[in-house]
Image (cartoon, rainbow over the protein chains, first blue to last red):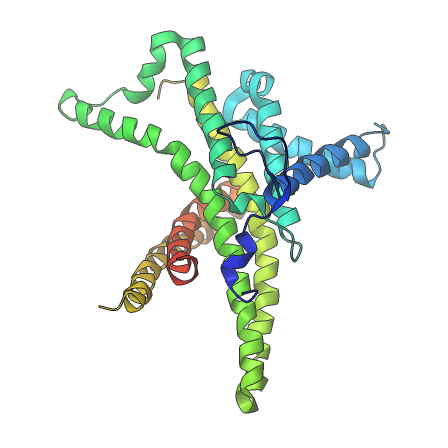
Length: 251
Length: 75
């Protein structure tokens, strides 16, 4: 079954940890690559910033660019207050997703973000943070988020319903976007790569044609690197936009 | 109908959704080019918005692709 394109998403247990009743604590390949993602991100940032030189070296430039990139994004959407409160959260999410996506690009390595539960857990953290911080900071004024100003009363009730539905569907679309992009991308790679041996085995002109799916695989592999970065960026960006609602709920 | 055949037809129907994402992405890049050619000096500042809009739109097409692929291989 190794030609089955869905095979790459199978979760295999690696180490059986002591069981807690009701919770499956088995250390799987998904857990391994989550730990690896955190490890790579943390190790790179601390190693690159070790010299903390006035004139940065190559690694330090990369680390400072990543920091400055997210810092700019957070301050553009949320202002100085948002940077103070939420920059660590957004930066952590971005680095973790980016590292996990990039580790998933290695052949035979596991892409953790292709398991829906991983993006879903992160999206729910963001969602609950928005609600918690929104009510803690604004009190009941946070509910103004659902009532846009300047809307005539006869369509206001309808707009409020739409706003509430869209607010509660946020964690869904937030997590599905990351999951579906990584999942479909890796699946597509495997499907198109699977054409190569099939066509080569057919013989004759069709075997010559197997160059086409091979070239496509290489091209899509390149695109997947772009997607890996882009989805981490989009996830962090949406996190900023949602958290901004908690700080400034009025429309 | 045979369950296998229904699965294949369902996957085909799900893939239609990608056409909508194609239209959306085309509109985004087309309008960006239109704006960028009118005012090239401001264009690089909007690159982040461009990519953001692209990713958000493209995700909807990816959703339907994921459904189609799950129907084909995952069930």
